[in-house]
Amino acid sequence: MRLRLVPKETAYDFFRYWRVTFGASILAMIASILVFFVIGLNFGIDFRGGTTIRTESTQAVDVGAYRDAIAPLGLGDVTITEVFDPTFAADENVAMVRIQAQEGQESVSPETVLAVEEALQTVDSSITFPSVESVGPKVSGELVQTAIIAVLMAIGAVLIYIWLRFEWQFSLGAVAALVHDIVLTIGIFSILQIRFDLAIIAALLTIVGYSLNDTVVVFDRVRENLRKYKKKDLKEVLSLSINETLSRTVMTSVTTLLALISLYMLGGDVIRGFVFAMIWGVIVGTYSSVFVASAILLFLGVKRDWSKPDADAGTQFGSADA
Image (cartoon, rainbow, N blue to C red; front, side, top):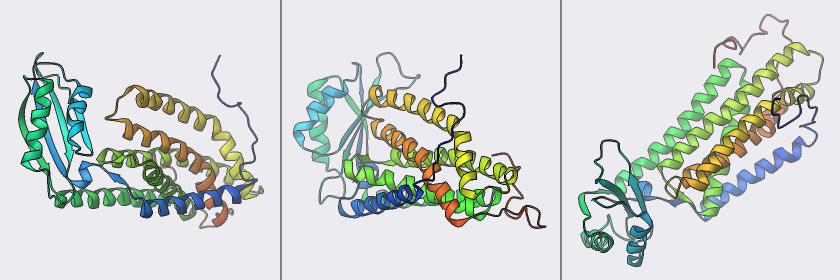
């Protein structure tokens, strides 16, 4: 017996209220942009600058005890991560303590570093500090620029790929869905003030890939059905294509969410922001493939007369493997 989260055959009208759903997406994007400019992101050490202290001890790392010892110093964003490496000896326990740059200072002062080391030594007298590294404002600014460029290049690559594989209308629909997902993700991070660091940039790029994969599956079926049902209205073809891929879409999203929710609950504080971004990205990515990318395609229209000499224009690479 095969597990099905949706019936084998469905006939939902996904475009009955497409103007409402598309309008809601636009309003959500506008709200996210406003929240970003009014509240801003809670940037982590990667983007604000700070200091990383490497600790080593013969005793097991107790992240909670380390955090409790440092908390009275009032240093703001402090991230403590235990480091695992198969090359470490049995009595070699390593952690990384990241401290954000303090207000009005270029980097964490030596006095602050010394205070942190003394606080940690009250927890574990055998602890040592083999290295202390600082990230200044200049490096942090470069990281911000590089992160923005990485996201824009990913979107640009998607634009070209979909244009070659399908047609320009499909390309604009896919890119609109990706922009929708990224803007809404940044908006939710601004509202909840979850720490935004390089791990979240990695999550954004992963969301781009996930959303694109879902969109391409739908678009591939749309192209097949456009050739198969030449007399059907474009809205009917789009709705039919989404229904035909709905089982696959829901199964992929649900199984991915099961793994991510487990990681969110059990993975600890270090990866919680990354996992939250992925959970949110899967939800909005699934939504945008249906209600944003396809709505753009419906609005722009697409070539239906495949009998003309230029019927393959824009689809000459359609048989290429994804």
